[in-house]
Image (tube, one colour):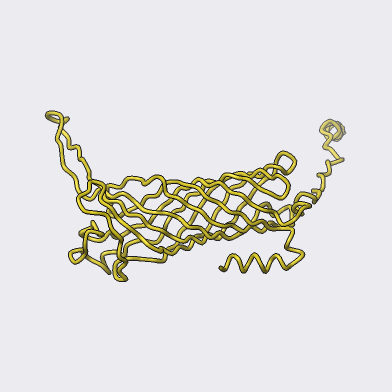
Length: 278
């Protein structure tokens, strides 16, 4: 809603209208979690994402890039080795333990709000845009589900508890991509890594044990840290609100003037020699 209101406001301003685009995106990727103390964790592939993006491009050529705002739906989660059986192999000093884990999977549906800075360069006569990006990200966890991949317990809906679970979060993101500009339409590919700083579970100072929980919580002691990470590859389609193009394309940069004077070493050497002969 906030994104739509911002874009509508900008569209009513003639000066800014030529300098922004609106895009939609969708893709898939990987999600995981970082627990402290460390836990056995596997990445979860096939996490979908889709969203809408707005970018504003500076008219000044020395400010290379864009700023913008995204609103994304992102599937997040992790696979946790909640129990294991041990097998010891080898003899003597080479004897070691191999653990065979059974996994619990947590699926989390989130709304993400990245505030993006996107430096870029244009190539191929302004038909190709290559960029990197950095973002500060706010998030809200809408819903969640869980399953035991060994079928120990039936899957179910994850019930949120205020003392245990965090619905709001924040983090940083970084990525890169390119867009092909065909008229006013942009087709592109983007890769972005979301690095979580907030925790999905409140630490054990607030929620010590899961003794009163059901099968939705595999932790006996709540982790001290539990941020979520995502790596996503997305396809993007955008519309540029100006047929002419961005102002940056038409600003001619001043040419560097060559220095006309040069240092004549021989003349200085000769003048020094004449002085010494006197």
